Length: 303
Image 1: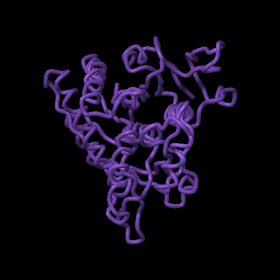
Image 2 (image 1 turned 90 degrees about the horizontal axis):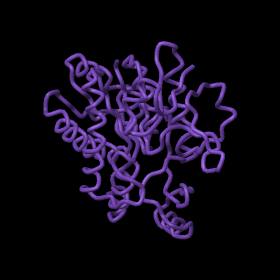
Image 3 (image 1 turned 30 degrees about the horizontal axis):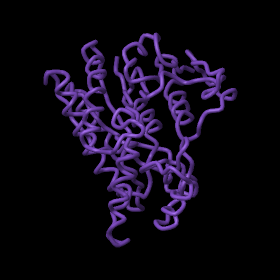
Image 4 (image 1 turned 90 degrees about the vertical axis):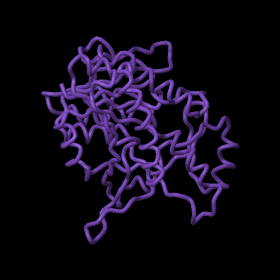
């Protein structure tokens, strides 16, 4: 099967861990073992990944410069795609014994400049601040928007929906040659189309799950796996009555109260991809990737 795997942020950095190259490489090496198992089972693999902490850190570093010298989010997104893609590419090659070609593709993703998301920032980037006062002070100093993320507070930026993938042609060429492709990292590099038909980057971070769903649809994938640090979608999550949902359909969505900044976009993205009966999506833990394909783990999402 052709499988698109979207690695959650935990594949690179677990909550509470310092954002060091050593920590990220160790976590990626663990993720690569699960990915290599999918390849050894005969599946065609395409990998996407998150970049929230990394792009946020680069933005913080850029704040040390004059305002007109700091790099915009689209450039920071491209930098993180290269950095994270390099780690995944190298560790996946190592896990497979260098038996298969692997390539990282910096991927532009087209968005609509009139998307209402530009007026309502919701995408978390950067470090978690322990108190609202600390986060508010940073926001006032940097001109940010902030929102609560679990027990902490983080910066939020516009997250427009992906519309198209200008680099789809080169992606298909790589797949035709049997290359395992790492692409659309962090949701891809957000671009808009100019009046003359050219492309230009825009200040935003695209949700990686929606970008992964669009990618999986455009390359005719059979399966979309969203791998995270929980073993599925839960009903009444965080309560004593919490229960993992084994199969989720669009009819179940109105009955669920899902966090807007985490599980809600994942469910929406998988439902979007799995609207065709010949394919399915699943949400679950990285360690359960192969079992999710057979319906023995995670939450399977269908029409």
